[in-house]
Length: 295
Image 1 (cartoon, helix red, strand yellow):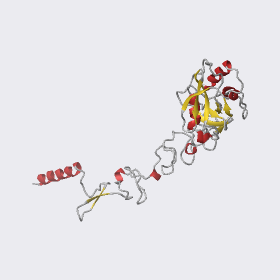
Image 2 (cartoon, one colour):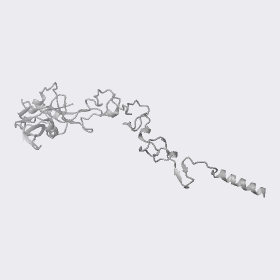
Image 3 (tube, rainbow, N blue to C red):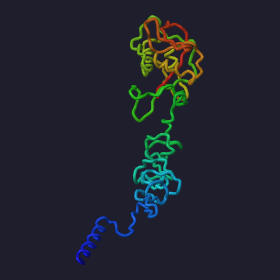
Image 4 (cartoon, rainbow, N blue to C red):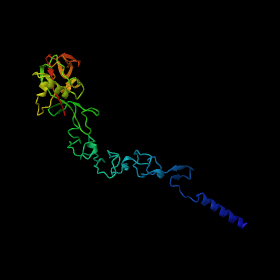
């Protein structure tokens, strides 16, 4: 009988150890209430995340937290030493020099990213307080190199150069309001191109083959304005750019303007600046001229 009691005691002891249910040992994730028999999740900082899953156990009451129990002021996601609530640049490279906003100077222009409006400035460029070089500040309608910017060459255009800014500039006023195109009845070989970028070559072809004084191409070619002497008569498509931006450029006094694009022996392309129609005009007609140049 004594042996049986002893074996029973050993069995009970073994069961207690096996199921880890001896005495009053507490589960750190729960609060056992012996009176009600209920089990409550322990959440010491009352942030809605159980202590066992809470990476930030001292969150202030009422703070919004993520699934790990952390509020933005307790996290530094990119490891730059600036907590997420103050970090304006959340993906700063590890080891980068940063400012108080957690932002580095990615393009090396000495302007931190949160104040940098031009994020790809070449490191050697002079920049303004917004991190932009003068080339990056160029916009249609802006004054530049003797005139007003009409067009900026996009990628794919013959005038486009990667990493640089180039385009077309118009004079700020008309060069004439009664110039002829010249050489009525004569076909000017090579002056029939109408594309953006063709005006300069058209002008050269006209001057090489038409020796009349006072013609539109010669007025542009002889112009020296604000230190620049490389003006030319715009091609048909370049002239249309002037029309499309006539309000921005301003001071268009004429009704019709010449392009450098020949239509046929007796005609060249002109454009009305009322509604923008383009049409062939007799070369002897006296209409307006506006010169352009490229940069």
